[in-house]
Figure 1 (cartoon, rainbow, N blue to C red):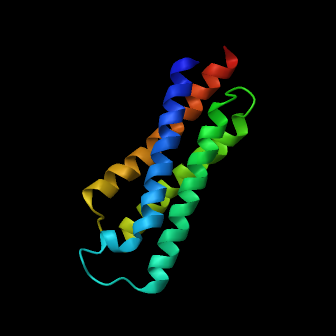
Figure 2 (cartoon, one colour):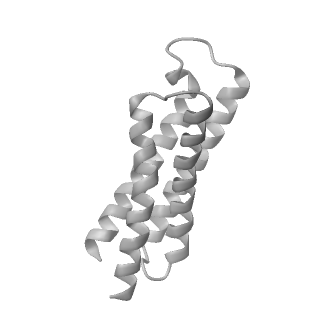
Length: 124
């Protein structure tokens, strides 16, 4: 259970860090220096704050692995849906940056692995 808790904490901290940088720096960090529409930046920062909230939910769930099962699963659902949304973007707008493809892979794989691992931990 200790390894699971450590990995869960790391995943939560990564979510919080990435979300916080999105809130602080906005969409312009991905524009290549071009101006970003206010509506796009507004939506980007909002979704970055949601990523912070998901990270906090993951951290909170790590405090009681067996008692807060639903919290982690709901957070992982959010991550997984985010990965699916990236696929929709790729199919409709075009190939994203390589780091975003890596993010998509992480968002589609890590949630499944953590939920299956969590199931093993709570059954032990």
